[in-house]
Length: 270
Image (cartoon, rainbow, N blue to C red; front, side, top):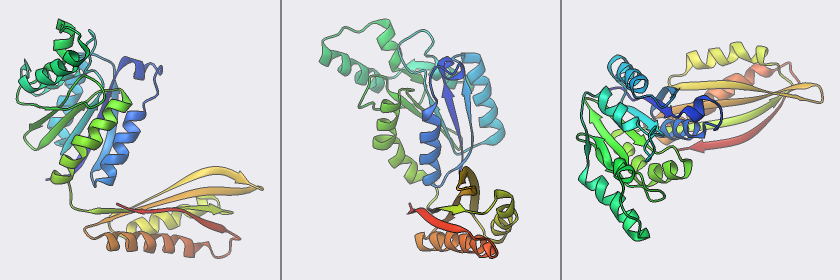
């Protein structure tokens, strides 16, 4: 079974550039630290046919372990992501008893009556498990299709993040890869990125489960500044960190002949 993941951020406001898409960055980062291999993210307008078509393609062609969608779970006419998920899975969109209870309790506490628009948020794909929303009203959805888990969360970042941290991530830890991620970020001053490139490639080829990326950051006193990121994964945390260290050492050892300054910015093992 693979550990690949895809992210779908749904919202016409995202595609039009009216809202900055921070959800993709947040989820991509969290999935990566959990050991999933994030292959990409897709941002689409609020269109049931379009979203269901792309979901179907990814599910059938890629067969990822996880798909996460954000946006389109609210009470308005264009909040139709779960309808698209149901269509992609060839399932019905049905009133979920547990989701209805969650929605009703929220409005009962406020003394606000239920309306069709509010009840709409309790409709999930048939067979889905509702995800509690501790911040807002709309529940999320967790549904398994063959070997793929489709997780749908609200687009409001505060709601999405609270649901992710309190409910989604603990369950992904149970089904995800049992590996640790080690990361080292360093700042290198005085070496052009083009000079680093062949040594980065050499390190990636030499060490298994290593990812290295250089990020140009302009200049300081006429010297190029590169931020170098090294990531390694392994079943044991110490092995992951050692692999990242070895890959970084191989790259830095190549800098003889340059009056380079190297500064460690961050090290992390998760």
